Image (cartoon, rainbow, N blue to C red; front, side, top):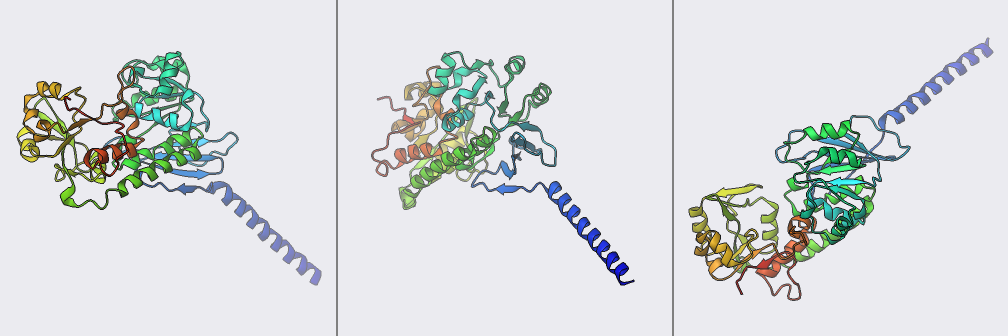
Amino acid sequence: MKAKVFSTFQLIFSLIFLLGLLSCSKTVVEESPKEKIELDFAKGFSIQKGKGFYILEVNQPWTGAEESFRYLVLAEGGQKPDGTFDAVINPNPQKLILTSTTHIPHLDLLGITTRLAGFPNTDLISSKTTRDLIDQGLVQDLGSGPYADPEVTISLDPDLMMISTLGDDLKYLDLFKQAGIPAVINGEYVEQDPLGRAEWIKFTGILTGRFEESVKVYDEIKSAYFEAKKSTTQINSSDRPTVLSGIMYKEIWYAPGNDSWGAQILNDAGGEYIFQDQEGTGSLQLNYEYVLDKGINADLWIGSADFPSLQDMGKSDPRYTNFEAFKSGKVYTYTLKKGPTGGLEYFELGYMRPDLILKDLIKIMHPDILPDYDLYFYQSLNED
């Protein structure tokens, strides 16, 4: 009788132990544990890392977007985690298509420029490394517009396509998806912190198997930015020059809002923006009389489109000549460096190198702080 009781106890214990093992095993498989990788300043995307995969979520794909996109970068042999994804990407794509010049520096800085297979309107590209590839016929010109010739794009059969969009051309995403082309949205331009825009190189780094390299590049840029910013922290308010920005277009004066990344760099450089009471991250639309009243005596005019000279600027609209900054030749524009086919390097590299923009502005406003620094993007429009 005792032996029978002991045997029954053993059987019950064994069943409980076995069920416990099965329960633990099932939990491990379903959870697909993920680690969130924290970002410094970028708010438009997030990163999660798991065993053999990364998950990228773009929550600000374009200005005013109400939808987000999830992308899975899955290593060969890796286990796909639970959830739905807008694209699944091989972690080391060799043939890339980009649609914004601001993404070109990502490839250059990560040492993978040779992976670029196609780009719309290659004349816009300034990068010397990329231009060499274009001249050798190794980069297909896709025509004007971001998706001018979808058939050519599909025929290139890229491993990855990275696009920048205003949200009005999403039909192409479905087209490329049907063709088996992973197309992801890069929303860097929505960021309003200068280093937030630069931090999107981590997004590209994960997509191209260069995450560690991208972190190193970003950290160097961040360090250079803060070092330059630190040099202006002791500037008294009375020593901050007043700065006018923007130009007229069809009777409207367009200038950056005070919450924009450009206004933030201007402030970090030790300037006083005359439109600091105008909130907003986008472009302000002001009337000339208001601007004249606010900015007629501004010390400097920075960001005056791409006029080749003060004379040409004055001819385009004689009202520009009423400002003291124009009269004194203190007008600066971002046209110092142009590619051989006319592309402005400022619009290509500026997002990725806010430290250079910051140093330029410090040099313009407080030349004694950086006596040995030469302007990189900006130049004076002084007729001399």
